[in-house]
Each structure stands twice: as C-alpha cells, then as structure tokens.
Image (cartoon, rainbow, N blue to C red; front, side, top):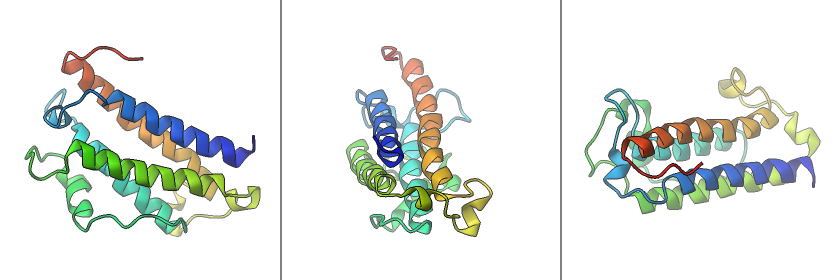
Length: 162
C-alpha cells in the first residue's frame, strides 16, 4: 500500500464512521442540539461538505460544484438557525458528503510524494502548509464534528455505537 493509498483509505473510513454515526437519525434528529450553543448535525454535515470542497478546490482538486445555496446554509453565520426548511434533508446531505469525500479520497490517492510536499494556497497555509497536511487534516476535521454528532446521539437516547 502506498502512502497515497493509505491517505485515501483513511478519508473513506472516516467518512463511513460519520455516516454510521448518523445512520439512524431522522431529518428531525439532524436538527437536535445537545445544548443551546452546540451545532446540530444538519449544519455540521453541510459544513463538512462545503468547507472540504472549498479547501480542496483551492488546492487544485477537481471538486464537484455545490448548489449556490451551500455557502449561505453552511457558513458559520447559519449555525444558530433551527428552521428545518432552511437546511437540506439528511439524504441530500449524505449524497453531497459522499460526492465530496469520494473526490477528496481520489485526489489523495493520486498524489505523488512530491505532490504532498507542495504548498497550499496562502489562505490555507497557516493551518495546512502543504497538500499533505491538507489531506491529513481532513479526517481530523471530520472526526471533530462526528464527535459532536456522538454527543447528539446520546442526548437523543440512541444506542452507543463505538
């Protein structure tokens, strides 16, 4: 297994972990918050789609074009919105999540060792100085938000999965 194969596999496994975490969530569950200041899953999942797609597009990945409303719905200003009609339904979010994460995994899989050392655009460099850092940061970002979803699971009384 090459480093690129391992990175792609790690992204795919992390994305699956997220989908497994919310597999039994209804559309209403997607809007549940464990406390007033916490993000709900509908925003967090859309944010993962939007931010991951944006960062990888900046780094030169062939990223799917998201609907124009994604920026409005999944930007930080929308975190306090609880209107069910504002956010995409769970099935639509999962579809976009799969497209974006699949594209990111394919991007990772095709990187050479020299590609991983290439600097990212200036806007990303403080957080992810190289393409390799960007790829490695992605599962970390997914897992951070999935941890929030695990707390929501427990607040909804759903079974502990992991």
